[in-house]
Image (cartoon, rainbow, N blue to C red; front, side, top):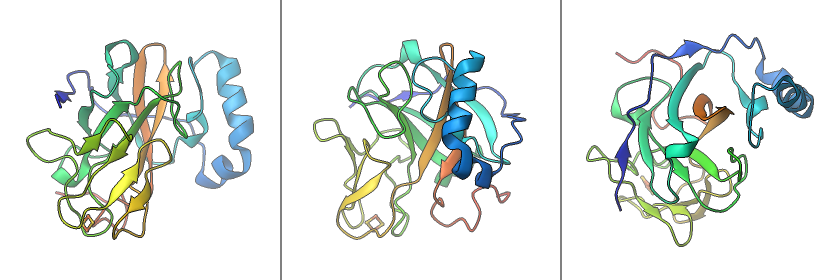
Length: 194
Ligand code: FES
């Protein structure tokens, strides 16, 4: 499967949204409606309420440039090391918390939450099965994750979902705005790694 490198990323910028995690949980529906009404978010604003405090708002792709089942690799929320490698995918079918006009654009961190197996290795290939819309199997113990349903485990050893990158669409731009779940090896996804 051909995987494109992200050539559209720009310097991370503070979202400046001032929305706390608790506020997101309590008022997600209200927040989504407000953002949609503001005209800042186009397409399906499913993830608009998932901006998370402290996370950068990073441009990771263009809606118009994505092709179904052709992942784009990017790093988030930090530029290195490799544990932050992630994949942006247009699934071609609606997904939980998917964005874009069809609600089928999602992104996931590429490290297996079991013991850190690489689903997005350095050569930019991605372990992804387009027919079943699953990420994996993990090269170490064969875990697979449902890309349509928050990265939930579908087989093997992991006890956690694959961390899903929260997305926001503004015009044609796709932004990463947070990560749901801990990235493997990180006590805090935003802890500075040198
Ligand atoms: S490291 Fe992925 S299943 Fe064990």
